[in-house]
Image (tube, rainbow, N blue to C red):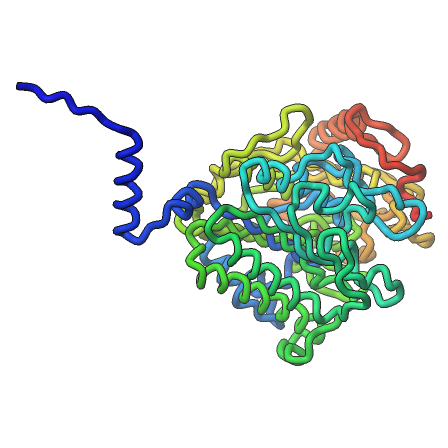
Length: 483
């Protein structure tokens, strides 16, 4: 005799809960584990050579080094701008600054009053919010001061931090915000990193039973160099080295909180810098790279970057040429979020590279803009710097004594990079990551190809005197001028 078994879904679900409870597993946490938490730790002005895991000798960064040893440390990871605001806009949207409408750094003043990340732009926070993630931005925003441009207008349920850079010369820049409200006037600069870390840990502990996205954008190690007294003198690298080690300490506080809450295996941690070091101002190191912040040399765009997901991603050193714009489509792929299909997303899904620890770059060409000026094009190992004038430069790079480069060796160029260039310069980054020796005369066919590509992308993304077919125009004239 054959017995027919009838299965009641409600009974099965009930007994499933009993089974799970016997083994100490809570249903909400099990469901949360289906989607990883995502944390982006975004340092400010941290150079390629500022961490001990990237070769720094006078600075010790054991906590960031631990992330690197447990995850993937990238040697050719790029941001989309060598200054604050455009780099942040590109990371959050996966789109070039010329495409998302944020090509130059924002500052206080009437000209930039209505300048912010456009309401139509879609951020990582937006797509994760649709996946029922808790979302929070902590730290430096720098993507718009007015309503409609703030973090809570761009997918973040909560915000705690500064609207821009801290500066004791303007009370508005010393205001600490909670969402849209000022919660502290004249906040001491040295208190920020402690406050940010405390808020971040509170957010993690509050949301440990459900998936969360934390975007923690430190003001460190941007000027001013004001270090908490317990870190002064702790490095061999002067006060700036102490500043870097303070940043490392608080990164360690955050990663320890993840371990304490048993979230290591369910959290993707991404650490990177927004651009290269401010060599013209207070130092920092670009290591073997030439140039730094404000330039389109590798020292401005190539940054320290580390990605870790314990048990899911590979560990080691990765030399693949990747971009901060890749984070949006990659996070979408890993979380089941939807990528916008009504616009160009310049980033690519690199989840396979993260899992395997190796792979080829998904980018055929990459473009280096300084403000609204296209200054270089890269394909694989080849990078071509394009002719430019002083008039082409954005306000942070203008220097009325700029001289045209005429030789072949760039060992002693200005900290502001190549301000004037009358002919193209070609570099093989595989053999010359410092961009020291021009080899354009040896490879005219490569020069020609990259010049053709430069003309093509100018028509699409624009340039100083060209409006691109897919360029979002900022709400003011004379983009490259401050006033």
